[in-house]
Image (tube, rainbow, N blue to C red):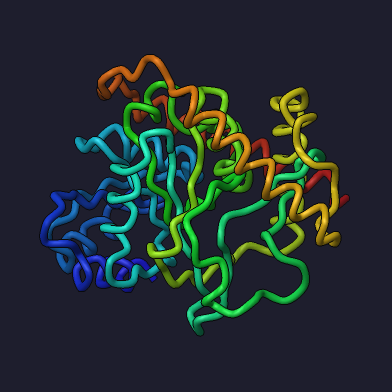
Length: 299
């Protein structure tokens, strides 16, 4: 899937935007990285022998990045024409946005994600009820609670101001939600731009029970971190059209407030010191602890 992702970037890369491609390989041996270097040109490839998780991978990639904007793109995603241009144009037009996501489609074209709703119990849902609407739905720029990291632009200065992605949410789940909340606390919003489209294969090869365990574990971690702030969010109502409408309206009202009260200090971005060996060690310990906790529940 990684090769398909990189091929889509090569095929639809913009001619008027300078960009760099950084590939972070998790749990990869030297041979894997070497083989990728042989068949891929123009990308900066870095490999770790351990699973850094989503947050750890993003933080390592940022350490190497030089641009004013960062874009997270999962290896199981393929971009469509105009994707990067739409994200960058939106960032230029909306300084109040700390992050911008796009329309996410399944490979067969069905709508997968169009910005997400966060409820006060820290569960999340798409902005619709039941089966997804057609891919032409949600075709307007709007403020949202959060967008997934499958394809997400983040301002570099904002990334640095919040200290990057929180690696406590390991290895996946709630990294994107936590990022949005942290940006909101800084007075920045998250926008959904439907003109930035990707096809996303979604899922993983780990067993379903383990994924559910990780998701619930990280939800509790998220609740502990953001419990007070979540009181301003809509009570659980993912099956209620009225509750969904209120949740959407809350995000839009917050965006209007931020637009009228812009962030005062916007420091220049800079790469901070980074210890990849220490990060490898920390992530290895997180991985062992997570597996041990899961195995203990199965006994």
